[in-house]
Amino acid sequence: MTDAANSDRIRLGNLSRSPGFLLRLSQLQVFNLFYEALGHDQLRPGEFSVIWLISLNPGVRQGVLAKRLMIKPAHMTKLVKRLEDAGHVQRTIEAGDRRAVQLTLTAKGKRLVDARKSEVFGYIAHENVRLSAAEMAELTRLLQKFVGIEGDSL
Image (cartoon, rainbow, N blue to C red):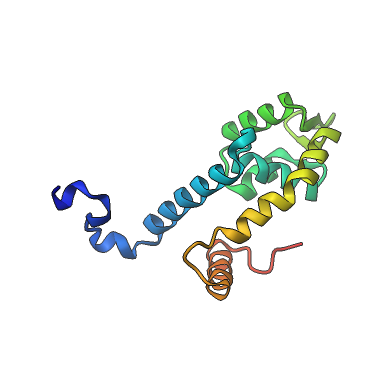
């Protein structure tokens, strides 16, 4: 086997110091761990994130949520439609502005959040496979600072 045939031996050069590259690989690793731990019922990280934020912000406008999550409006519309079709989210269109869509959880959506939040956030607490608790806390703090959400918690 040649060195090039083994992915662990691929030289990365300056990419190994690129935040964007490292964040993307980290995201892929976290998503793989998520699906291993929680993929048994087709729960997707992005969908749970949206449901979770709606549970914390009932009546939030779809566009405001999309902007906060940096999701393109067309993608957000599709995501919300899937959640609505699954019976988790209710959309309400404001009478004065038909473009303003407010989102709330249905009873089924609330049950999903209640049933899965400890599992989802428990999984998150265990995803620091190679990091100590202190290192994970520091990484989280730095990522919050990097994306501008320092101190934004419940």
